[in-house]
Image (cartoon, rainbow, N blue to C red; front, side, top):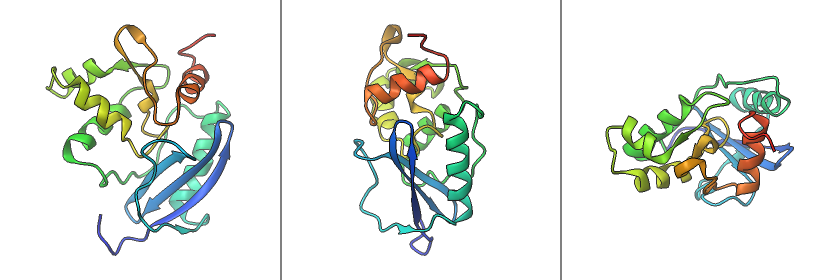
Length: 166
């Protein structure tokens, strides 16, 4: 990330708890639930709810939770990750609402069929929850495994998207 990039943030109180949204000049750089594992790194984010990307991100996340939006249309800044992490995060973006995949399948798509653990680590470090839908990745046999925001939130997101019925 260019050190001259503006780093701004705002909070959003969603149905699954308070969230911090962050953006740089390049786009949306973070969507974290308060207290989640792998939250924002030690970066100074200046509060600015009027920043255009953040305003649009809050509107789109709110519409998603209201069931009015099935996909996001936001510029993303994924520069915080390694090349491998960014490749995993790009694959996550391709998983449609209502769809799921496995860590092993993501590894196969990336040409790294033996890399399920590395894929899992990259998924867990996804900085843009919900918008980059890491909650759509399941363990072997559809098991609800790991989610930095907590399994209760992962379950709620998959219910909202119609993947889970109960």
